[in-house]
Image (cartoon, rainbow, N blue to C red; front, side):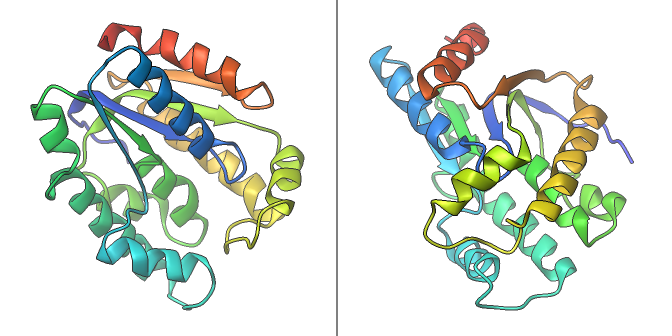
Length: 207
């Protein structure tokens, strides 16, 4: 069920399936903003806080949590990310841009594989939309090649699941892309430099 949400203009969310390069793009954006002397803070989800560490243990397969529990943990971790000490709200109030590697679109893409979509959406209903959403799109077979070069994979990295995650991302973005946020869709088979250039152009109204 679609719900009205506030839009936080200075919040930038980078999304995409595992292997799409969201972390690399976030790092490139940090370097680009630093070179332009633009004040910013960057973070990621799950966070490195207490709840985020529990989530990462579950994603690695070391702890077997039921899907609904994992969805609840992601929502709780997100609340801390938004409103906790040194969180998103604090940075935006200080006049900074905030870039997050993943946000609640990831919950709608991943947690809805095994939990009801409307329920996961409801869990995240209190949270604002990012002013700018960057979606790093990539074919699943290319993402799988990249993941095969990593040390260890998480519970959502199987190809069959990734195809479902792509569909869920499209549903999530489609549900909210006319709600006031700006959306950039990237072809993540391009070089990190090119992806960063396109992203900086997209974010230019924040500078």
